[in-house]
Length: 553
Image 1: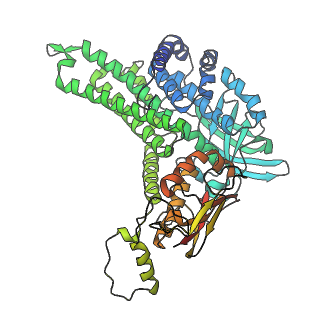
Image 2: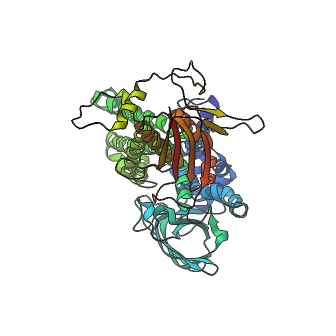
Image 3: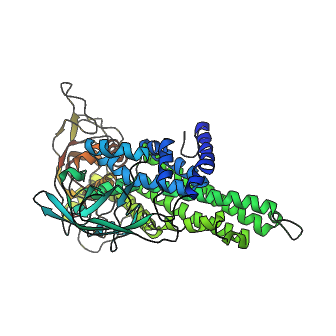
């Protein structure tokens, strides 16, 4: 299956879900109380196996599920999605005890989950959160407030992100799993444009211990971002589902409604708007599927693709629903009309889980990070620049090296036939396990030593770019190769590289992707390498630093 087509079984499943949502779930949704958790609806989602499938599915499966439910019953989609948002951190970072206690209850629709990240002063800038986790003999005490929390205050548990290290930005946040019955935890409901269960949570010295930590202390921001990276394309799928529902209603209405002697569909001013609605909806749908498929395949650039999917799909849904209201006229504004309902539903997705402006910032940052990761071409490939000053004595030697032809092959030091002879060759003894992505030993003879300083994911303005370790690895490696090129070297001249990672488990989990990045930027002449885990790096937001040694001929 490609990112742009679905298997027949998937298409049939989507149609079944839409029918199920319309016939079985919508009646339950209509019986719910506005602004309150609809527990019968959650139980039905559990009985149908949809909550369990959501927590065990990949990103594309999740998108198909959310899109299909949204097309038939937005309340069912929202109830399912909020369970996923609150429970995914447990799936990804919970201990066996966490999973055993809560996941069966979530899958059955008996336990209501909440994801408590946003605060009155930290919405889009999640790393600025201030909810304090103050040390106590038993662990920590949580003090502060969370706001705009879905399922609050009725949730049975909340994944709460709190600051355990003041002044450390995203690196000082810890994720805690907090049951609703903890002393000092209260909350209140908020009245919203679309009557979803949303509220505040107040923490007055709420006790938590090391047993409540999801992942590791001070690494909670990664728990949050990993959750949002999985869910973000599916927010776009929710939007696509609403857009398709509005489009379906509009095609039906304009084909049946007569005016000026014929159906509205005969009017070019109407039919062209419907065509535009359909085109944008299909484009959004494919963008969502592509982002989800990239996530499932472990490809690079997932934050950028997910941001594009959410941005375009939610903005498109707003346009499609608004145009549908316009083409329906006053009837669409009556309380209880499908489009009146969708008009209230469609506004929030442009804000939550990263507003459209934040998505644009992510896209731009990722594009510039990718550009920075591409090594600058060697000086020999650039037009000669005029200079009025006397060249450095070493410039002649560098220019002479630059004029030597290079071949794709590698020659050993004693190979007189090598067009561009390297002063080093790789040794991988048969007695050792075959190396993957490195060499066991590199023999270097003669030549000039180049010591390359540690490089992180700094852009030319001195800011760390990239929200994930693979993205930062690509920029850091690109920076290292830029320095190497400036010294007259090439990736094949590297003899020793050391990678310093603040999260070795995260590094290990992304090893295949990091290998692809290395091969794309540096080729397959692997140096002797080591990966070392460190507590922190000099650049505050850096997750990885790379230094190296090269021997130039």
